[in-house]
Image 1 (cartoon, one colour):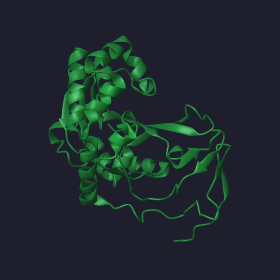
Image 2 (cartoon, helix red, strand yellow):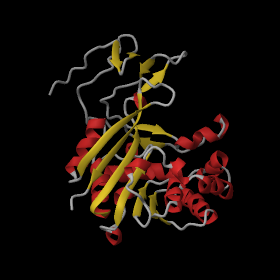
Image 3 (cartoon, one colour):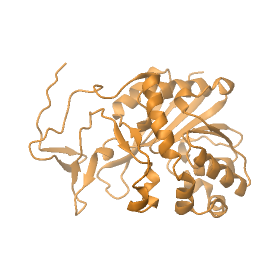
Length: 296
């Protein structure tokens, strides 16, 4: 294996100049040196992430979306709007069983329930569950909400139950071994069932805009497998003083090729992979949507 790291000062992605730091290598040909693997390593990460996502999460959702009663009114008005990025990948959800893994505060789960689906959420945070169930009650729908680490979840009672498994926004970086997630997805999907994954694009997670916003600096190594420690992303709802004592979760970013390989390796059949421009910086990809199905 070539262990060299070529020194690059300028590279281009979708027509945007990515400027590396002076004399600092920004491209690596190597992977998998820093990211641990296996269930034991995953449980260590999950323990940190449970603490991070259990700290003032309910309060954050109230600050961001309003109390559940207020948020429910907005969802009832137009549930399809909440699902706008992925709605076309669902072949209709009325009467369908959907697993929303790492479903957080339940906004999309409640939207799907309002559209007629039978929704089960699996998430690591009891604070998220509290907000989601209060939101569902206010919207006059029901949810099954399981507080569990997906990688260690005993899903035997849900094996083969779901028409769709749905994951959206900031999910994969909580896993140090994607097979622990994809194996669970295969286990709970019905034959012919569909995975819909809508995620932040790994390119944009490694880029920062300059002051004018027309060029982007490459931050770190796209091929790197380092583990980063960060507070839960809802920290933006709090002041700098308030987040000073927030516990840190553990995340690691995956290359798009690694994601596709993990999905294919578990036996799912890829149906589509689409990329969407960043909302503010349209020359960079912002998100991607991967659709795959379990063979009949």
